[in-house]
Length: 555
Image 1: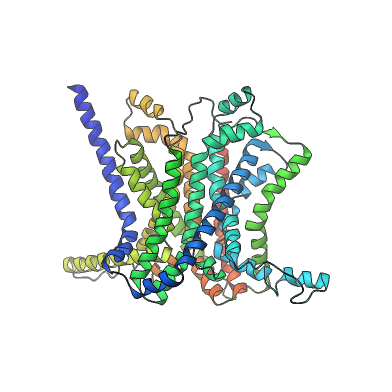
Image 2: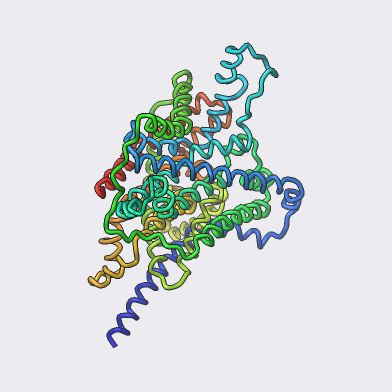
C-alpha cells in the first residue's frame, strides 16, 4: 500500500513538472506557430510559385553549402582550441583560455562591413599590393569577399566560440581517471584525444555546432550585404518587400525543415550511445608541457582565430572611430548601453531558469513528450528575428488590447499599451529566439551526469527539486554561467526583432549601428559597434574567469 502511494505521489510530481514544461514550450513556440499557421490558412500564393520556379534552387544550394562549411569550420576551430588550452601547456595559454571567446562580441554583419571595406579594390590591402608591385586594375586576381565562401568565413570566425566554450567545459569536466586509464592501455596523446576525450565531449561538440548552424540559417545582415541568396533573404523579401506573408511563412517552413533534418540525423547517428561521466576522479589531468617549437605552433593555432575574429575587425573599427566616428557620441550612448545591458541581463537570467526546467523535465519524464517539446523550442533559433517579432506582435497586440479594455472597464482609466509599450514583448521575442542557446548548453551538461546520482539522491530522501538544487545545480554551475553568457551576448547583438518590437523612442546599440551602417556611414557606425563590443566584453571576461576558476577547483 505504501509503495503504491509513493509511486502515485511520484507520478503526480513528475506530471506537474511535465505540465510546467508544456506551458513553457507552448509560450515559447507560440510566435513561430502563429507565423507558420499562414502556411495552412493562406494557400499557395503567386509569389511562392514565382520563387519556386526561379530562385528556390539557389536558396537550397547556398544554404547547404553554408551549413556544411560553417559546421566543419566551427567544429574544427572550437575543438582544436578547446583541446589545446585544456590539455596542453604552451606560451600564452592562460590568455587564450578567455580571449578566444571575444569574437562573440562582434556581430556578423559588422564583420561583413569591416572586411568588405578592408579587402575591396580601394581598401588598404589591394591598395598596398598595387603600390608594392606596381599593379593596375586587371593585372591581378583578388578573391571577392562578397560571395558564399566569404559569408562562410565570416560566420566561421564569429561563431566558433559556441563550440569552444561548450567543448572546453566538457574537456575540463571529463574524468582525468579515464584519460589515465587510456594511457595505461597504451594510448598516446592523439589516441586519448580521438578515442576517449572527443567521444565523451560529443554532446558539447554537437550542441555548439548546432547553435552556430542555427545562427547561420537565421542571419540576414551578412548574407544580404554579400548578395548571397538564402532562405532567410527570401523570407525577408517575401514578407517585407512583396508583402506576402504566406510565401514568407512557406519559406520559413522550408528553412525549419533544414534544421529538423540536421538534428534528426544527429540523433539517429547517436543511437543508444550514452555519455555519462562515471569516474570518481573529476577534472582534467596535468597539462603536458610542449617543446618550444610545438608550443609556438599551438600558440599560433590559437592566435589566428582570435586575430581574424576579433583583433583585426576591432582594430579597424577602432581606427575608423578615432578618425571620424559618430558626432552624436555622448549621453545618448550611455542610454543606449543601459537599454542593451538591461535587455540582455533580464533575458539571460530568464532563459537559464526556463532551460533548467525544460531540461530537467525531459530528464525525469517517463515519456518522450518533454524531449520532443525541447526540440520544438530549439527550432525557434533558426527562424529570423523579424519573423519571430511579427509572430510575437500578432498575439501580444491582441492581448494588449484586451488588457487595456479590461483595465479601463474596471478602473475607468486607459493604461495604454502594457506589454508592447514596454520591454516585456521584446524580452518575450528574445526568449523565443534564444532560449535554444541556453537549452542546448544545459541539456549537454545535464546529459553527462550519470542517472545513478539521481538514484543516490532519492535513496537519501531528496525529492526532485532538492536533487536539482543540491546535486545538479552545483555540478552545472559552470555550464549555467556559459549558457547565460551565450544568451547575453546574443541579445546584445540582436537586430531584427529589436527593430520591429522596440517601444517608441527606445533604441539599442545594435539598432544605432544598423541605422548608420545601412546608410553606408560605416565610420559613424563604428562608434556604436565598438560600444557593443565594449559593453559585452566586461561581462564576458568576468563570467569566463568565473567558469575557469570553478573548473580549476576540480583539478
